[in-house]
Length: 178
Image 1 (cartoon, rainbow, N blue to C red):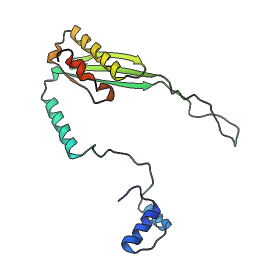
Image 2 (cartoon, rainbow, N blue to C red):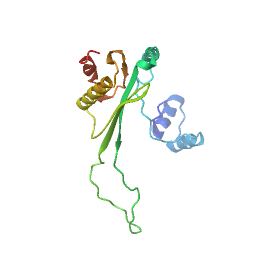
Image 3 (tube, one colour):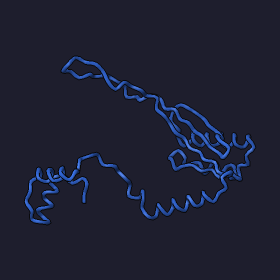
Image 4 (cartoon, rainbow, N blue to C red):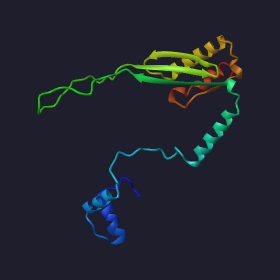
């Protein structure tokens, strides 16, 4: 079952496998009667929900669930693009409404936060994208801020996602003896 098969491929398959000779339009009519429609496919990676990854996620959730909640600190970042444009334009009947635009989509605003059991532990908002180096600096600032607030960093468990910008953070934590 190939969801990307063309009508002609299906007709050819019927001829090869069943010796039924039909045209592509007949295949289309049959698919239409069965409520099959053409749509853009949703791409899902092969490793997304395989047995090994499900087991790894299960083990991770069990390990995090065993940690006392007062020790957990969740951190992540998100961004918003400030580009806004109107979706309609006016033109004379029979002609297109053509707009000349630059390639820029506007500035990004990034928000980095960490949340503890007692609430917001740290936040920072900045313009531009967050790279690996910038993320390491922000995490260093977050750790300094948490320490100044009286938290013993060696007893806390920091939980983040696997964003590319987070790939060098292990060195930041190790550099502080964590």
